[in-house]
Length: 217
Image (cartoon, rainbow, N blue to C red; front, side):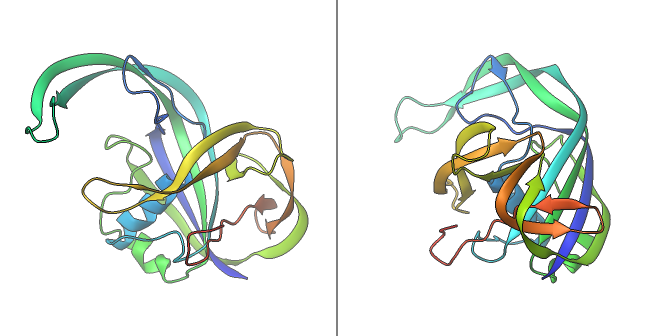
């Protein structure tokens, strides 16, 4: 199949665990799917839904560290009351350093969006700026028993890795709602999946995430 391969680089990246809000904020070692679809939406300038296209990716970094960050806290006792400033706090935030994201996209029209992104491209927070370094149209070959690593795949109990329950995407409402929360497996070391795609130019396997119009993968 024809696909677009987009390479992005960033000095730092951080993908915060959703259940950690204070004190220490660790990062996942690869971006969740919702981060990828947020990146696509930023490039296009409008919401890109999970059923609009298929995506695959792998992510690598050269190191990691922990930074001290001052945050401003807001809140209110009741929903009827306006949000008010509560004060500031200091948290430890883990980050990844010298990062590279290889992104595979089934919709070739995204070439023009990544050539001139509508919004700033981020790999995490507003300070985690990403830059497009390469865009290429390639052929992906569908194969059995494909090796993948440094990515996130749907959990099926066959591949070892960190198991997480995460939204595949979020709505674009002011108060975002999660879409299709499901278990995923973070694959850092090389592992085989039953069915995948193969990038012969880079000699690597790709797990392509494809959803139908009901949001099911």
